[in-house]
Amino acid sequence: MKTISIIVPCFNEEETINIYYDAMTKLKEETNKFNFEYWFVDDGSKDRTYSILKELQKEHSDEVHFISFSRNFGKESALYAGLNEVTGDYTAVMDVDLQDPPEMLPEMFDMLEEGEYDCVGTARADRDGENKIISFFSNSFYKVINKMSQTKIIPGARDYRLMTKQMVDAIKSMTEYNRFSKGIFSWVGFKTKYLPYKNRERSAGSTSWNFWKLLKYAVTGIVDFSEGPLMFATWMGTIFSLTSIVAIIAIIIRKFVNPLSSVNGWASMVSLILLIGGIQLLCIGILGEYIGKIFLEVKKRPIYIVKDKK
Ligand code: UDP
Ligand code: MG
View 1: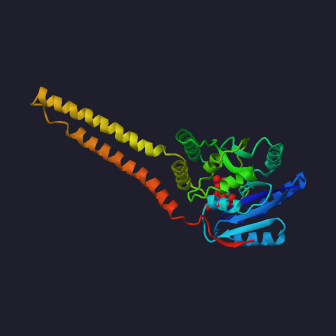
View 2 (view 1 turned 180 degrees about the vertical axis):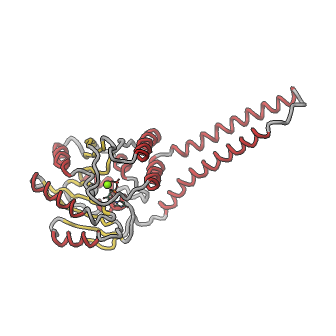
View 3 (view 1 turned 30 degrees about the vertical axis):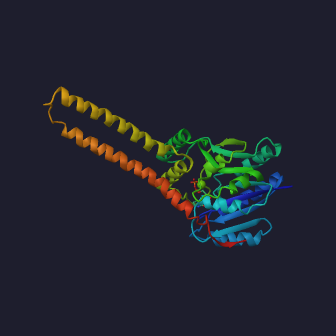
């Protein structure tokens, strides 16, 4: 029987871990097609996640492993830590809150077994039950990033996926500090099939995302996988320079044609100065975003720090 390694990032998930494990065990027994190797990653949780994982590991030491971080490093780091440990024939990435339906796994497994695909991913077909404003910004984000970046991301794509060893190795070879997994999964290539499914609610607990975290995540995604914003700065600079050259020529000509031309136009002058100043600051800000990323990248800090592992 083949083994599926499952990477499960957990941040303050004391309520959901056991529900998740029971659902997965039930699935395994019903399908009887594969074995599991769990890699739970405790991403610096502040609740009892760590002790619950320790207990679970003791009880099921044949299949359950865990890594506990020294602090919260984020889901992206947790996924990377898991990838460094997995040994199974296939590797799955799954949330612990059962929003990634376990019952899709057998179908995903069969598709990989057929050999046509290297990866089977999932995408939410709808956003029912989600905050309308967040849905609007999420949808806009996918439109923007797919316009600006060569790396395409399917709208609503989840991290939930099953992939081959080759793909795992490819992702492991991307050791960048700023990790935007959705982009990385797409960047490494490999033939991926996306299965749509209906959005569902968390089994318990609450989401650790809010609007600002999502916005930061979106900016990371764009800056990590597109030079588009830098080009915006160049284009703005070009347009304004050209316009001002035309204006200067016009003023010189007017001086010769009508030397007594009036000096009104103070208000329009001030608003132009403000506009140009604003665009300059915006462009410096965009540069800053990229320089900040380079700064973090060249420091070569570890992507995560392990406190305990079993
Ligand atoms: N998670 C994590 N580190 C974080 C935030 C989240 O490991 O800093 C995990 C979390 O425990 C869950 C998954 O990432 O298993 C998805 O998080 P959540 O359910 O809060 O996000 P949502 O499903 O609402 O997008
Ligand atoms: Mg969730």
